[in-house]
Length: 104
Image (cartoon, rainbow, N blue to C red):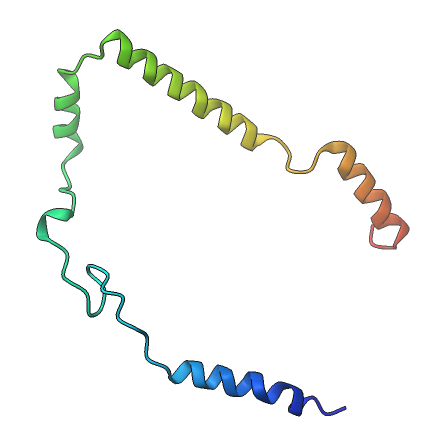
């Protein structure tokens, strides 16, 4: 069976889309858009300078509690990501079904 008549409209639309010009979205830093201001890029500092700044910093009780709470939340999220994606009972059922279908 010849599928060319079925695929011809899709082929022509794909070719036409490839010849189209993209509109100017005016995104900063993009083609046709305004340039990025020079101050938008972060400065890269040596680690020694950053550590020297951190030596004089002291967290008050409120900020320390917020940091500890955030760290606990991130640890909980990390633990949740370490769990299996497919629960063991579901994995057993899937393996049994695959075995019945000859894929196991």
